[in-house]
Image (cartoon, rainbow, N blue to C red; front, side, top):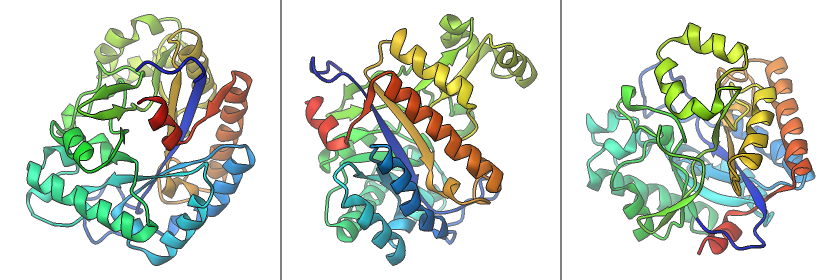
Length: 314
């Protein structure tokens, strides 16, 4: 991606606005509770007070809930905020078991993946009166047909790739060779979730981390010694010290012009995710964001809306 000279350095905060579910349990299309969206307005105000808008990646159970839609509509009244779509195939019609039991939408038959994208997009347009600009496949489950399907339906930005991660052991895609820079593919702007190797061995991270990933004790020892860590820009299971280092490395060494940060909406209320189990975890969650936003401001990395991003990348 070649950005305009005046683009500077920018970032987007993506929120996966989704139902509450337990990953330790089998997939269940009946699990559609969205009670944690009640915390979204307060979360939005905290970011807005810092001058930061949110890119809300809304999935089917949320868009089908009247109360959740009303909360999100109010947030979208702020022009700094953007609407995106997030596809969880197991809770998005049409249902076609057993294929529908695959949590990676890109593994579904192309016609079924397309039908689910259509169902989600139509519901979002009906709920919010606007076409979602960006898309994320839940669990980063992009497939070979996904980008073409999205481009044909008016989407401009995809955020379904998680740089430096490998989900092939679970039947999903392998992103180990995907870097952090945005790029064009199949008529779409691809914006991977930013993931940075930190530590003294970071320059060897692209080949070394996959080698050690199978040994948690060894990988943990390297992380504790600050030799090598793989850090995604999210407060969920990523320590703030390492995340701040990751941003500095991304800006100073990778010359990254656009950073992608994210979290899941159920983490805004204790007890719905393993990352925020109680009130103490929630306080740590917000301390993470306070430190991160202050660090980005110090580095003159500024927020950007998806609409502005789309035009800048044209």
